[in-house]
Image (cartoon, rainbow, N blue to C red):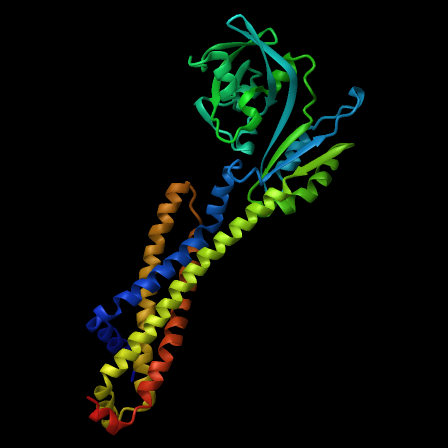
Length: 392
């Protein structure tokens, strides 16, 4: 039998008995769609998951700082060092911070002390901090050395109560600053009681501010932390002296996060594999049922001269067409899921990766059809003519 005839007969049989096959096709389609979606969007999902560092226990955050030393030995990080770190593979963003201890202000006739941090525009992204109102310090404020301040939610409540803090003036060390934003309180920790001003402004206007000797470095994903942490010291030493340099990584939190992620990933892939296996079992079941229901047809074909290999090829082609058709349906469903996730994550993977996943899904479907349809096809091809014709 020619290939075109074999394909036409197989498709016609599937369409004729479509009610028998829809459950199996749905299982394979869902498994294929899950496989395509997970592989295509896996990197983007992991990256998006890493954006909220506080929910991850700050597992992808690395702190780099100089130990406290005598004042004449105080060191700070150079701009060339920051640029070198930002260009390190696996690094998402880098923030430079200086501290001012013992900051105070007056509100309603009372004096309040708080922690003041002079930060650059990358501080918010690195630490996964967002605003509940107003705007955070940006490149415009740091580049213009502007007197603006962002408050932690607890400090804003202490100083202004129920009044809206954004837009008000705040006196810090006898200088007036415009409050431009209040932070969201989720996962802030001690920062909820702190105030933040541009790094350049703090260095210009605050006597006694610490050197810019603390770096917060954020990796793209938790997989990059183990690659980035060992090279940080060498990158810094290539740009400046680094006596007393310390690199702090939350290794315990990182291990816990990776363990949880591994189990979640294992569960997802196991679910996809189980769905495909069930689809394969379904193909085997329906093909065995098809062989039994068409026993007399097989006997008549053999009596008319059909060879065993032709009978086997027909049933095997039906199984492959069934799994391939289900895989194509799953590819369409996978494309829809990828587009939905891309819209939600505001990140679109390359078309090349999607096409590779579709191709792998089709090869997987063909293999599944061959594996599940081989035994029923052999059973059909080995039937005895007389017994098959007399079968009721």
